[in-house]
Amino acid sequence: MLYLITFDHSVFTNPLSVGELLVKQEDGEAGEQLNFARLQDPIHPDNVLQPALRNGFKHAEGLMVDASLVDIMSEPHLLEQASASQLKLESQLEELETGPVPVQAASFEREQDQLSRDARLDHSEALNWANTARRDLLARPVNHELQKHWDAKGN
Image (cartoon, rainbow, N blue to C red; front, side, top):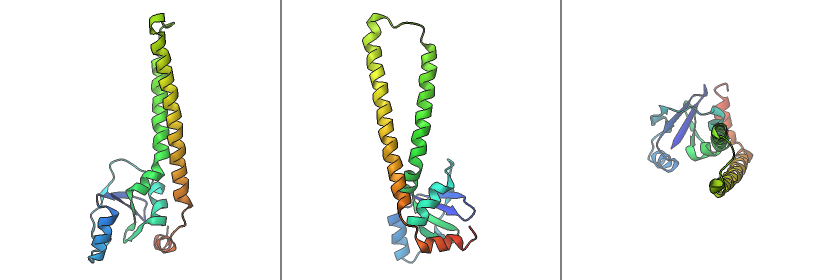
């Protein structure tokens, strides 16, 4: 899938892969001929622009970029949102607890506590990996031709 960020920072999408785009370009078709649709789910424009300036493609309306790079940029925020939702749910469930745990349920409670700790550790590790991948992507140099193309429209 490709994303298009326009000069006014609107974001659109097309199901075409980068490989398919390159084949079309070799066949003489311009990226401008692609039909892009407005995104259903909002995405932060900077999560599209930053990888587009490094690994994107020029388009008459802005820059195109592979969706996998946008996913790398977005992943830390999505993981944080999921964690916040999980913590909110845990808090709500704790409010429903009505006293001491009966002896017969104690081992189940310990097992659930361990599962919760393991999940928090897994989340922390996933977040660290996501942040590292994002930093690595942002550490790539900006492509000067793409930057000039972007700047030429007054951005």
